[in-house]
Amino acid sequence: MAEYENFVFYGSMRQTVEALPEEMGNKLLRTIMEYGTTGILENDDTVIYAIMLSIIPNIKSAKKRYSASVENGKKGGRPTTVDEPKILELHNQGLTQKQISESLSISIKSVQRVLGQNRQKLDKDIDTDKDNDKDTYTDKEEEAYTDLMPF
Image (cartoon, rainbow, N blue to C red; front, side):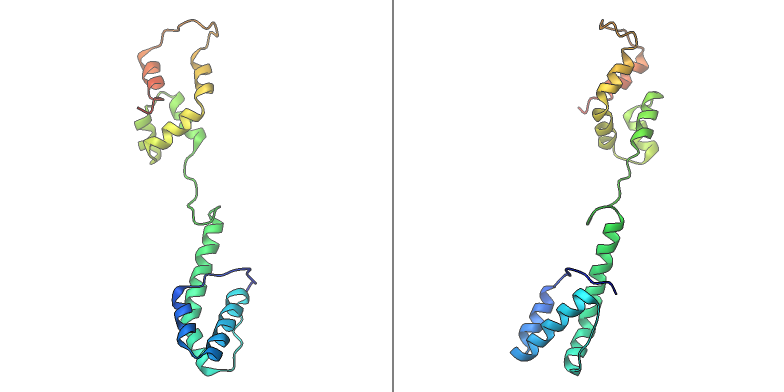
């Protein structure tokens, strides 16, 4: 097992250590710390060994959850599911925010966030003649532009 700098120490572990006589509690605490950081269980005391059999699954489970969260790209988070290029592509095809969110199975707020972040680019795309006058829009273009408004 790989060596870790840290591990989760649960309140139940503390209660177990504190319930034992001081010398045995200290021995259990050192054993928990050794196993938590190295994955090695070296102890000749059968009582400590028996207690560790109930503690080891908690340590392993916490390490497994941590490893899975690291694989997802951030500690405790889920992977990002928003495909920004696809949102912009569907928007450019004239789909409304609601249609985009339904077709990609994401929230309307996610669509609004992506479109809001790309508003300057979208505004440049709409003013194709670049003459800074008030352009006239088709109904579809007007709907797409007002879809950018989160209210």
